[in-house]
Length: 236
Image: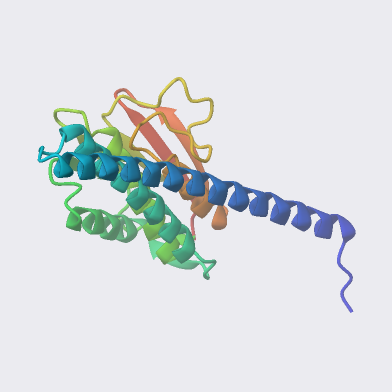
């Protein structure tokens, strides 16, 4: 009969409690975001109804309010779907380049990369890492979309995706030429950390959550222009 070391059991309980607390915090935050967005929609609709009853045309601000609040809800739901689909799955040996190319094509299919230049820099296109393929694809999509959003106000937006190996660790970088991380944020990866009016502050948090699922990590750096998100993954 195997006896579980109490210290190991206590450590597992602490990790579980921490994750449950984060989930509860995330749910409360999303509920708050959705409530705010729905309140804006309700107010805008009331203004539109009043204008229509008076025979006047809709005010552009009311239309903008509806579009903005709808965008906030869509992004919140997208992040929730990412989390719900990112269930623990067996890690397999998989090429980095394949996961990245599939993720880029999926984002391109939404039209979000229409005006964005994507540059590739692979030291070894055949480099294999041990991760969950579905979760890896979700992570890449989340970080690509994060970079696209960061470059939304740049005249010539671009994203550079790099990968290389150092010892037993592979690295993937997503670099953009946007304004960089906001200095007002104490921890840009923290859940709901954002200064953008159309942001949810969930993308980087979800990406780190996924990376840590296969004993990887996620860190932020300032690039020569813009921001750099670096993910580390164990190699095969």
